[in-house]
Length: 181
Image (cartoon, rainbow, N blue to C red; front, side, top):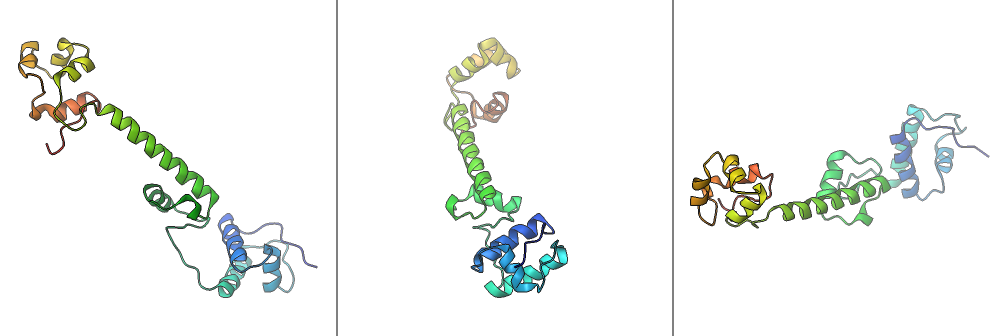
């Protein structure tokens, strides 16, 4: 009876071997090693791990890289695509990638809620009363836009469209420039 090696060369190889073992329908990594090596090595170095991987790939077919369903070897770029996409979490094989994508999606949802709460004019013209409220009075509003209070009041009920982007920046997104401006 053979025993399993005490370590496998790299974490990446170890994870990939485990995936191949499952796909090959084998019970354990030790079973896979027994198929490839006449005597079980004490340590499965990179060379031995590569040989084992080649044998398992031959048994299950050539590897396919599907970025919509990552294995344990998921790149940051793949995770970002998954977080921004619609792939169901249960289709992501790696528990770690699934955990990260789940949290990134939750974070994006929170960002959307916060951004929606800041855009007080909802993409339309910017009402002066919103700006007066934000700057806590006409004096601070006029100071922020580098104009006099009478000039600011002369703008009427809505900020001139030519100053909309300036307002968006000065308020940190509390109001947004109108859509199509």
